[in-house]
Amino acid sequence: MSTQHHFDVLIIGTGSAGLMSALQLSDDLSIALIAKDKILEGSSYYAQGGISAVLDINDNFESHIKDTLSTGVNLGNKDAIRFMVEQAPDAIDSLEKAGVHFTREADHYHLTTEGGHSARRVAHVADKTGQSIQNSLFDTVRAKKNITLFENFIAIDLLTQNQDCYGAYILNKSNNYVESFIAHKTIIATGGASKAYLYTSNPDTSTGDGIAMAYRGGCNIVNMEFTQFHPTCLYHPHAKSFLISEALRGEGGKLILPNGESFMYKYDDRAELAPRDIVARAIDSEMKTNGFDCVYIDISFKDKDWIKARFPTIYQKCSSFGIDISKEAIPVVPAAHYTCGGIQTDTNAHSNIDNLYAVGEVAHTGAHGANRMASNSLLECIVFAKSCANHINQSTLQTEYPSFDDWDASKVAPSKEKVVVSHLWDDIRRIMWNFVGIVRSNKRLNSADKRLAQIQIEVDEYYRLYLISSDLIELRNLVKTAQIIVKSAINRTESRGLHYNIDYPEQSDKLIDTIIHKP
Image (cartoon, rainbow, N blue to C red; front, side, top):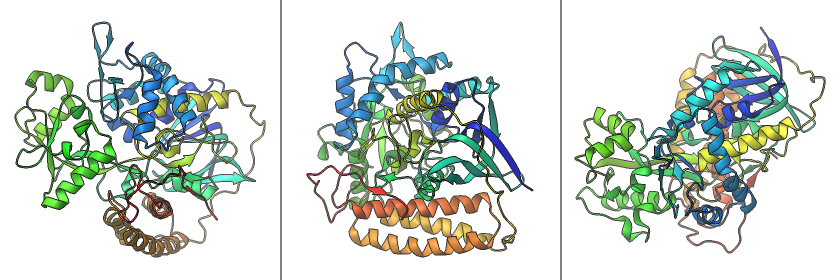
């Protein structure tokens, strides 16, 4: 069975970046919106903290730009950062028009602060900002007649001709048939790759699909060595790395050891408000040095009613595990959280492949440098989704669609060894956690590189022999993305931001991006 679809624009991914792109595109364009799982399942939905923007008269663009560059250890693209920061108030306005109701005090936004920020500039919806944004955007998308939603579809590979992109082969997970989505413009909005690590705050969808697919299609992949580990994920056997928002520290929460002793003052003058790379390494150091399973974050000195109003989601989740955060500290550990690298794009979100765009966490706009500043991620999603859509709206589309062969599954057989897929998946994630984690070394990176190369051979063989499946697609993408992360880390012979190598503990005087592309 084969099916071909034709659309003006194909959007792969339904997080904030994908949904906002769809909304900002012209109503005259036919749009296919692809969800790998349920429409709202993805990292955007679980973002608690907020979205950063200069909304206070005592704040200014230059300060936001300076903070972003400083947190990114000066590796960020200044033009991209300025573009993002200056467009931030308009992004907030667009979200409000889509139905997002940001938390307010009287006639102004309630703004909080987080690591790296020198001012209160994080607008939020209690502690469930991402959920509110996703619900509001999705409600608006569903009302648009030119947008067709495809739920439980997973992209396999891009359709390319002569360095142009014209859509993708996509697996319909409900019947396991591969369908061709042919489009004049394609937007990848598939999110990050933190599921490459054993412990992550991300949902199961974050398997690096868009990055691996773009690499195979000929895109430049930039700075993938910079994986951000969120310092504070709930440490509990049934919590599945539930995120404890950085906003807790922004509101005065203290990081402490099991004996109640503070420790962040030993690592940075900003203490709990230091950027995430510093805080994560500090926690990792204390855990390894002292043999602790976790550390704690304490907000219990605040009034209980205030805690329940400001952090209702965190309060309820911790309560479900028997932790009353108004009376006791929360056990936390670092976990892989955000992919700062990705598909190289310009401020229009365009890649080096014609007609192919990337928005959100999957993209490398240069806005984050060597470390993402808190709450700049949702901002990046919205700002660059809007510029992407605007660029497409101003483009002249071709009148005819190119032709592509249907997916050929005639030479493969149903798999009788599905255990191999789950075994290799687990191997990859353990290799990445143990050898390519918060602190790295040449020996560990080279060992990971060799092990992943062998797994890649096994995955390629499996892919050639057996029918495609969702799990196999993810495994294929996961191992390729893991390899790109490792090769990028090997190529960076310095320590900067999220990449800390004990064999190169100093920063280089040169500011260089790590670029990986298919030979």
